[in-house]
Amino acid sequence: MELTIVKVGGAVVEEQKSLSDLLDGFASLKGAKALVHGGGRSATKLSEKLGIEARMVEGRRVTDAETLRVVTMVYAGLVNKNIVAQLQARGVNAMGFTGADLGVILSAKRPPKKMSDGQVVDFGFVGDVKEVHTDVLAGLIAQGAVPVMSPITHDGAGNLLNTNADTIASELARAMARVSSVRLVFCFEKPGVLLEANDDSTVISELDYDTFKKYQASGVVAAGMIPKLDNGFEAIRQGVSSVVITNVQGLQTGLGTTLKI
Picture 1 (cartoon, rainbow, N blue to C red):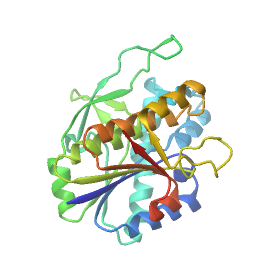
Picture 2: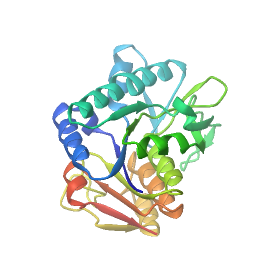
Picture 3: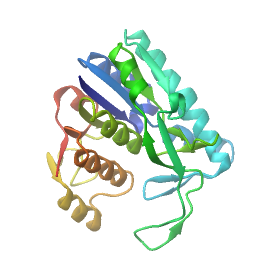
């Protein structure tokens, strides 16, 4: 079985036009497929309305107890079911999941972590993936179901955890690569990894890990792009056949930034 896993986030999820275009493209993909989504901007907006401060460190959300409630409502509820309904309208037999459903993704609460600038950050109720159980999920995909996964996981002890959506996509791709050929596509509002953040014509067509680390050190690659690339390179090391970072148009054309080891 060949499987395409598309991770969508950023402004693509937040704006109806871009989301509609993305879902049109996703629906037209041939073969088995799955969608992993974020929704961080929607979560940030709701947090602000509720008077809850949103805090990000190196592209990752610090999640206290109140923020966990917000991201669960937004990711697993509003965003997930909106995508499922719109895919169903396009003839795609979509089924919404969190990592807790069917025990697909088991995580552990992240301990305080020393960051690249030396500060020690307690990320709160953030989960680091420990196990991915894909047997049931693979069976559903084989029967024609299209999983739509939100980035909420569980610890096996009754607690929900917020997990980076890029990590979810990478870990799911790595696990499914044990039983199928997997293509992983990170789809967001830019056409790929850019040399100049404000110039969409500066797409890096191919990017290897050493060059990525140089770009990270120099600031060319920053914020949310860092976990995206970290996860993408790890996916390739673990057997995923192809990893591409692109936008909605690139989902069909194949253009964007292809990662190489």
